[in-house]
Image 1 (cartoon, one colour):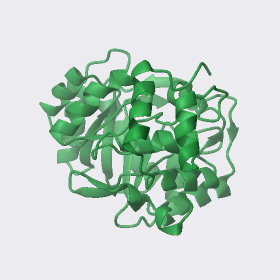
Image 2 (cartoon, rainbow, N blue to C red):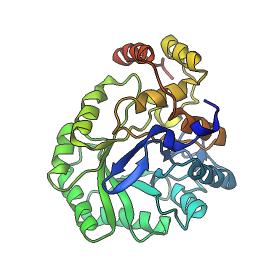
Image 3 (tube, rainbow, N blue to C red):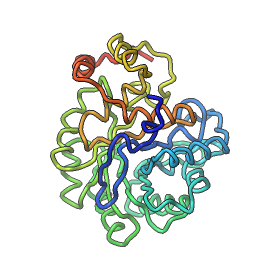
Image 4 (cartoon, rainbow, N blue to C red):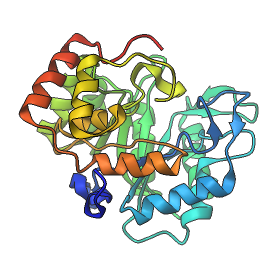
Length: 309
């Protein structure tokens, strides 16, 4: 896990989001604006120079797929602003994926785009913050039982107008995915998924059969969600045993297992720690044995990857 040829995002292979080719090991920016749990009103803003350094290092390591959103911000930091400052003018092969639907006002309170006008405003805000004339991929994030058709139709219109290149959906059911695909092509599905969450297997398989990228979030954090992988937890003995056999961390095994679920599965682990970034990217080249996969499958089926946070 320490040789130089393994420390690039290309070790995980590639996938195409429409006409855009990305390395399967990407980077999520949710944790960049603050220390500790994401979205906390009292979260300590991150060090700006360190966050910028992490983004630049990610690209140096071959990461060409970034996940972001305008609602990723702390009191002093915005993920989109950090991306723009660190990477603009952007590398030609860099794909930036963002999410719309939910948002946060200036106090940090959650709001939702419930009308086409509000959704267009969110798209335009992402474009402005990133300093671009269009967005590569936009995921419509669902929540609260909101209908998907009208809002996804609005995104399809913005795609036709040239403001968006490709469309995806997030936090969806199979039925909502079908509803979106009846309106416009879907290149990716971004849902919570990881070792120990077998309820997500069916949608993962459905995406593979349809040639749609499946992009799990919380693949490392699991039930710890916004609290992150560093939150106190008790690891599964089986997971720890596999990690020891590879001289790897449990987080690296989770990432390697996630990528093993299919060639259409993309990873977007996020961190503000440069050492964790290097370890995450290296996990893309980690090859699990059949014995490893059998042990981890038993953990996955039981949903016992970790105890309570």
